[in-house]
Amino acid sequence: MAHAAQLESPRLARVEELAGPILTARAVRKRWGSGEPVLDGADFELPRGAVVGLQGANGAGKTTLLRILAGLFLPDAGTVRLDGLDPVQERRAFQRRLGFVSAGQGSLYARMTVKAHLDYWSRLALLPARERRIAVDVALGRFDLAPLAGNRVDRLSTGQRQRVRLAMAFLHAPDVILLDEPSNSLDEAGLARLQSVLDDGKRDGKSVLWCAPSVTGLEVGFDRIYELAGGKVIAA
Image (tube, rainbow, N blue to C red; front, side, top):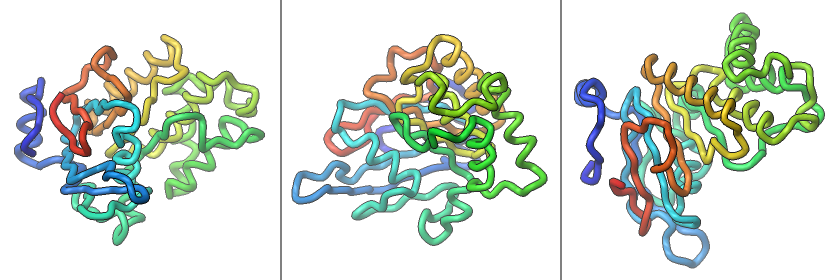
């Protein structure tokens, strides 16, 4: 990738050289209506076992790119591949290896309990029945949700709801996790929990893309930081 930033970790450089990036976007274009393209030939690579930041001004197209990478939107042109998988032709396998947290407070049902959400998500994530209970219990522990397991979501604070959404995204141990402004509403304890999960995932070879208007002030330890501007992804 022509605009790749320098990796901080020599280990990541060796892994990427041997195996290549796990998630790629090539020459992606997307236009809404008759306006200028939001994405205009954007290229992007997510290395294996890396935490990458993507920043850009409001309206730059960050969420559009994230949703195209997640297989939720189709680009007008260009390709997306997750370890060689096509998001349309191989949708089941593609989605099984992906976790996604959208911005805001969506994807939750007010009257369902925290544990019911995680169980429901374990089924949507196509986990085998014998693995669901263990995965739910692990997710509850990792995001400090066990004391809230029986609580309805509409009785949680916004920060607690955000932890539920994060737990859902990580529950099925995906290889790639896409996070759209994940720190919103999180207090220091919630941020510490998220950082711990990211550190564990990185050691296990998981890859994370963290998207926000600005990521340079976050104490996340990004391996790379990119910026989306003018419809293209460039090194920050």
